[in-house]
Image 1: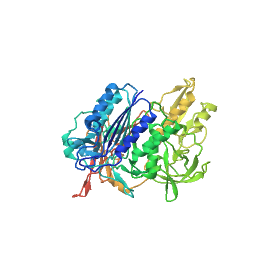
Image 2: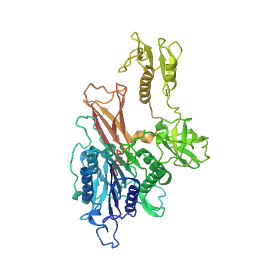
Image 3: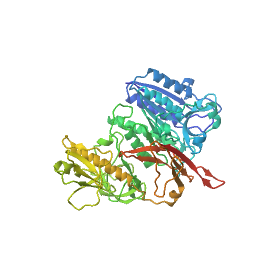
Image 4: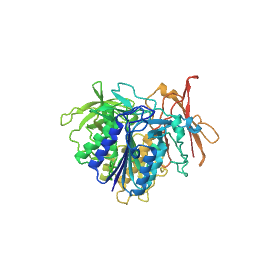
Length: 575
């Protein structure tokens, strides 16, 4: 298999502030690829600033300029020459900008999209819009290439995290309508929508969250800036420097790194040293970086220190409760998250819980004696917030060793015998006249869409317990409530749900709809802060489906200075 790479670094901008580390980013990445990957076909497109400030073109030859035509030409060549299962790596270091979406539908939502600022010999700059890039990537992914994209540029021309920013400069510029007008966006409808899908949730970063067949790692969040500066004596982008460090360490150790493990390394290092930007990951997390291996996915939290105390980046919103325990350990990108050979792990216990973080105390020191530091990872061992659901076992069910073992290992179920006093149970398990296990509700009626299972088949007891656990998880999610009362948040938005006759919820908070009838969900952001929205559908078939999410984007408040009011809305129709 061949590894194709297109590395784009732009220091020289005719109309905007020059950068200083972008070209070095891609040169170093090119050297890494040639040293550590066989069968590499490398294309490096760069724009270095000329010594004469009056010159309008970079010092490189024209066929090595990072122009739209050169980039598209390289991608077209790869599409024709590459074979299925080849790897493609694209790295962009340069300025980014945000494109305002000007159609009426999107303008009401306060949305925008990212664009990469390329060099153009005629106009000075040209934008490669996010949706244009997505179209190019989709073509390559459909051919069977494994595509990884790294974007080391700003996603926002506005909001920057405050604080001491050290001697660094941003990689972002303001959107210029004049440049955009020179190269209008080709209108291609339904880029990500299926014509048979009625739940057509849309957000400004849909092309990112819809990444299928390719993986994108970004340097920062959708409303942050990314930075470059003098790092270890060389000009680099923060993201590119950390990425190259992660890949080099993995190469020296002889291990493969998954996208997830590389991302976790970048995220941890940024939190510890460059907290003003937060990398993001879209697409396939489990595949190895420029490799064909797949790793099981996992979720770890970060350890960080503040004012001499230890904290974990998980809180009440993540289901953390006081008394929960975590295993904590130093993290290396060459380690497989699921198969860590942890010899230096310590244990901590939660002593206070906040919205998105919690405070912890050390209960077991690391065997190596290492102090727990910012950048370590935390893996949960207990979840006291998960209240076990009571399940009644009918007298006709022989609760033998198999049942006892299966129920004892369950996080969600607390069994009770039928002839004992017990709290109100979610459901009960019986053995019917056909020698089948049935799951009934508290009134003795069979749970809808939960099948009866023959007691004679092999492995039936773990299967029944898994069904009970699924029902218990559903009930657990259904009963979740917001324990954090915020007067600001309560007034920041309103939600309206109307049926097809424009009738609202009744006094009990219910709207009745018939099969195939459409209901309209309208979310209004009255604040001038971005809000994030996700809608879940708890179906009659005991499934929980995400039907809408702003994902990496946000519903941004449109603040009116004259009226001192802000209202931005998004309306979705569901059948």
